[in-house]
Length: 81
Image 1 (cartoon, rainbow, N blue to C red):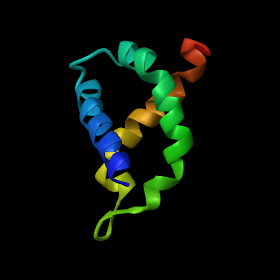
Image 2: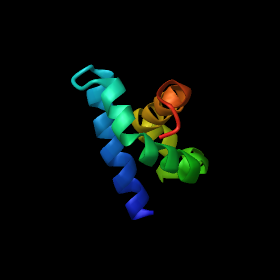
Image 3: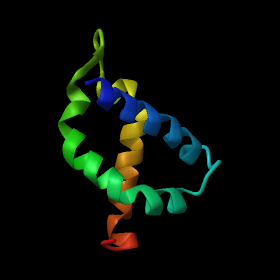
C-alpha cells in the first residue's frame, strides 16, 4: 500500500501543475498516457479504500483521480500508442 500512496501522491502533485496550466495538459497526458492507463486499470478499485481515518483514497488524492479521468477522456483523441 505504501508504493500505491507514493504513486498517487506523485501524480496528485503533478496534476496540480496540469490543472493550473503550468504545464501543457496535452503534452503531459500524451507522455504519461501509457502509465496512466495502467494505473487506471490497476487502481480503479482503490478510490473507495480508506486513506487516513474516514478519508478515502479518492478524496485524499483527488487531483490524481482527476488526472486519470482526463487521461481517459484523451484516449480516443491521441490514438492507441
